[in-house]
Length: 93
Image 1 (cartoon, helix red, strand yellow):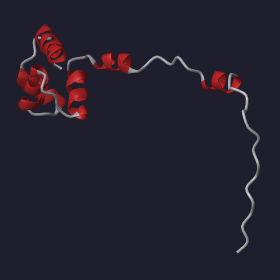
Image 2 (tube, rainbow, N blue to C red; image 1 turned 90 degrees about the vertical axis):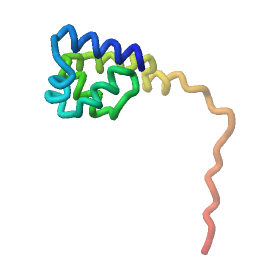
Image 3 (spheres, rainbow, N blue to C red; image 1 turned 90 degrees about the horizontal axis):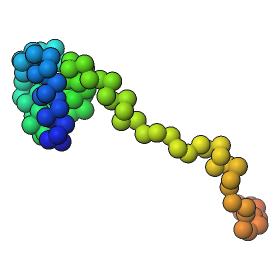
């Protein structure tokens, strides 16, 4: 988390924004921005709001895992059955 906080701080300084500017535009308190920059973390909504203010919201798309398994291929490559299936007997009552 500390490395992420350092990146957030570096981006804020590149954009020449103060903590107050980021907090105001993000709709969060200054302490939230400080905690994020120090690596302490915050809520996900606060984190996303700060990323948007710092114009880094496209970074979130990189967090999506790459799909390597196709469910249709799994059906095709399914292993053959090992046992026969008998329907259950109906209980009377």
